[in-house]
Image 1 (cartoon, rainbow, N blue to C red):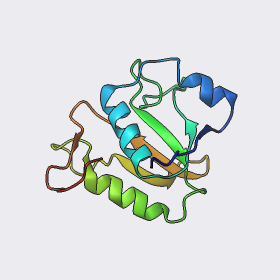
Image 2 (cartoon, helix red, strand yellow; image 1 turned 90 degrees about the horizontal axis):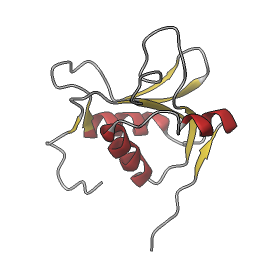
Image 3 (cartoon, rainbow, N blue to C red; image 1 turned 120 degrees about the horizontal axis):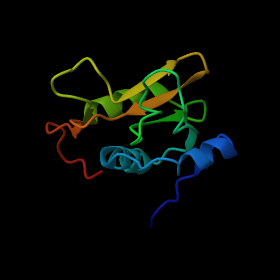
Image 4 (cartoon, one colour; image 1 turned 45 degrees about the horizontal axis):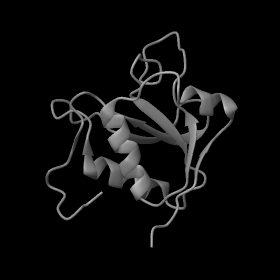
Length: 127
């Protein structure tokens, strides 16, 4: 039996921003993978005009934020994501998922790059 995962949006502005710009194909795969974790997904930021470069403000969306207060063990989600995904093999310090506070409250920040890939060393993961 398939369990239905709750997906929501912080507000109408965030919901509408999901349709402003196309999603990077790797961001779609990442979002689908996060969905498979069977966690509540409340989007708090998708596309957003900014005065500085950001994965939230590109012509092809490369990032999204999720509320972390609804997740019992957020550090596990961050670690699991970064174990399963490589942001850019040439820049190993960069991460696909950050659990942080950038001035708007603590949340998950997910991002992709053209070179983002699944970690080939993770075996038996069908997600």
